[in-house]
Length: 427
Image (cartoon, rainbow, N blue to C red; front, side):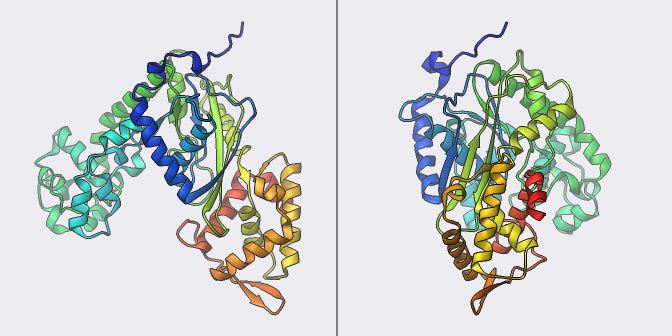
């Protein structure tokens, strides 16, 4: 017999949100910030609901994904608190007392020191962020402190670090005992990727403690679901550096396996319309609730989770323009790009992908003219008489720092998250 999932509205208010006033206050601040920086379109089913104990998953392209998703879901509830705010699995290093100082490594030392004194525990509690240890972001200072607790406090750093780690830290610090270095604020440890700077035998000394910490954190997340709370977890475990959807890691599956009962999974996908004037546009697409996804087998679970997210990925005009610039003609007319946008829009719908509302309804010629002027101002295209010349540097790496890198990033995203569409456009 199949039982209907209970509605969150039937839960007592105290269970929905143990800190309602502070949480709502912080969410209001996030809402103001997101509105100031982004233009957000939310695509959601008419009967969208978020039952208690739901695991929410999405792709992860930028650090801004989480506040955008949180605000977008919160706005969908209207004036009342229809859904309780989600808990969020967050990078463990971001929840530390000095993460602001670590993020500002290039700032003057006095300013870094000041940032390190700002207490943010109340903010993390209000946004319901919970730590998730991710090996990739573990800094050398964090690794040093773990080694100190494991009994290596008096060992010189030079004995524990590999050649690259010792070179990056410097001989001055390498000759000192580990306990002295990891507590010295002047030691250059926070901007160094920690575990890859250790000797293999040193990393082995941390393996058991790391595994125990991760297991404890996953159990805590599973307990939140069992208690009826909703949790956001990024299956990739990190932001995508090149636009492609990363490997689905074991975290989401581990949470569902550790839970005392089955829980629904809500897939989301978001994309950025980044080759456009004005505030950065982002489209959030909410999928259908998955109530029978099976976490018992790692490979099939990862494939199912990846498909559920990538099929929701909203295709926007920037994806099509990036594809045109990277694989299209070196010289073209405005009408050529307009025809490409029209063809892309038709192909997106025919392939069953979700078009950005702007792409679906904008007039192709006007859209092409607007985007070409923006690209021209940034040196991506140049005017040649009545036509255009692509000035996009072919060796541009993928990223978000420069418009040329954004072109590569979005072209990679289209090819990886919508491969059938990308192949059809290439025919």
